Image 1 (cartoon, helix red, strand yellow):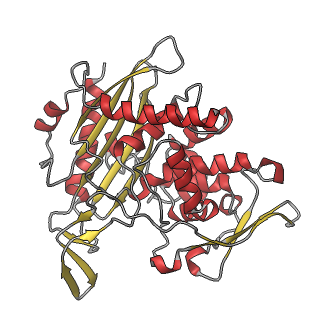
Image 2: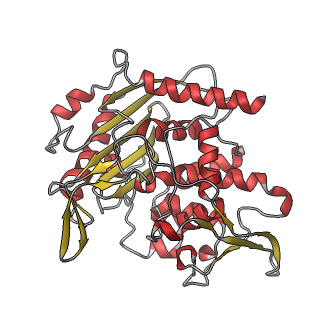
Length: 394
């Protein structure tokens, strides 16, 4: 019965978020004015722009009042979510962990994936403790730099059946997460690899057998075709859009609600994690790579401060010196789509907002050619948008 009420409550939250997003009269944020003043040339339809903003007003209750406004928000208009799907996966990894406490497994228990397919391999090229395959290390790397290998490991740990059944039970009925980022064809991804967890003596303390997924990948009910042509190889391009209907999808309204439910859990929280786990996620979600003290990030100029802070910062490589606010976010970048789902909080705590935005930067309409217009459209637009929204919220 309790599970039923949790599910019902979450469904209502998702519905209300979408409904409230259409009510702009009480919002301090004027998205139309922001867009009209944009220094970045943007076409709302061609560039597939969707924006959802939630202004936080603290109340006496633990859950604040949030006023939503949106522009172009439409969950029936597909965008490729890329790494933004990592947000629910990292949280579900902790839920899974809580369901297996009795077998002696925790966030720091090393594990391995057992498979004959290279689609499920995870080989560390370092003896550093930060590179040991653990749930904690995977989550840190995902939240710090959106590490794909760590996401793949957690995806294989959970499996797509677990992930999607959990999302549906929580009321996220439009989202689906059916693939890792291994690059393997669908024909090789129907088997969940076996898993071993080890204690300090390198003894197996918990084992899961390999299984075949019981549910086939569902085809999205919306039009998920994007682009004008597809590059097959360096010499071949075929006419026609790329079909994403059997791929991952995380619409902005559900993605932002997932973040809101993490930041402000209700008395019947959507996510079944502890307060300590929630603090852990929020800490690493808001860190810059240099703050991690992981040598692989602190010593590599590739991982600059704004590496995954598209809103407000774009892809500025200069150090972020201001600590006026913190951004707790997840991003996605692939096939021309640039997405950021974020919670922005001023240091004083007087200003708080949720911002989710996506845009498509692919002027030539060719998919798979890796010639996307992120630097001239996607990043500059999200940078401007984040700053403009932050400045409008009082």
